[in-house]
Amino acid sequence: MEQSLRGEIRYMMKKKNILIIFLALASVAFAATDSAIFGEDLIWNILAYDKEGSLHLGKWFTILQGKYFSMAYLAIVLGVPAVFLIHYLIIGPMIFSHDRKKIYVFTLFHRLIHWLAGISFIVLIPTGFVMVFGTFFGGGEFVRVCKELHAISTIFFAISVVPMLVMWFREMLPTSDDIKWLKILGGYLNKRKDPIPAGKFNAGQKMWFWICTVGGIFMIITGAIMFFQDFKLGIITWIGISQIDLLRASAIFHNVLGMAVAALFMTHIYMSVFAIKGAIHSILTGYKEEEEVEILHSTFYKELKEKKEV
Image 1: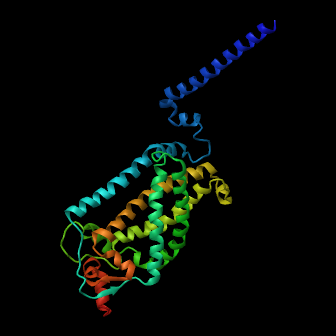
Image 2: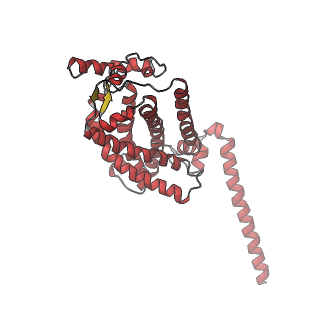
Image 3: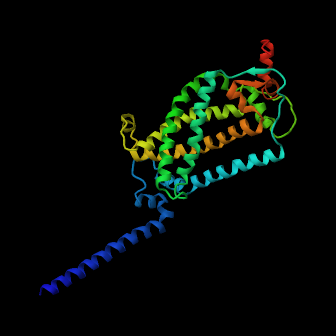
């Protein structure tokens, strides 16, 4: 009698499990076949990616994070150096005379702040790439250490970003020279030494500056949100943004800005180390070669001549 009862119970449980599996599969099948009628969002709602009243970032976060961000970063890490290698082999570096007067451009304070930010980026960019391609590196301790280094470097960058924004803000504002500079791509596509319309900083340097400072501040904020994750901000609750929405938005924003930062940082390194021979010395000593200023920053050079500083 007891054995028969146990057998009956097992049979009923088996039928119940089969029914549950059938209903689950039927739900997903219904969502897939009727997505054209009810919209693709139905699938994402069934899979709990979206909730009523949310920012509906679940779908985009999953698609971008799962596929497109890694593809974009791979294109940057391979494509940008490849373009510069071609430029170096075909056009070659600009070489200016070192026999003329040297012009004092960067004070000691300028240089210290610049190097603090520069060293931060030398750590931030590679560790950021490791985190993006964490699966490729096998995860584990190496990726975890890179994550910690990324966080520590962010602190040093945060110390430098506000002074950098303040000390160069006025000189980095757009001027009519920037449009002229962009039209000829700064003269980097030929070997001639034609005077280039630019002030103390050219359009390329200005683009990097604004991405580095204003973009960098947003990178710090979104990075902190992702690093600490479980925290509460009264204003976020007040405007009705959930914690998961905040994390998803931060991850998307951080990645998009990260692409611009990585590409422009590589450009900045190439220009200062390879494209203009000896240019990096200016951020070491504070001095630029007169001919370099006369050609690459012709507007600034004219201003110096008018002030009789040259």
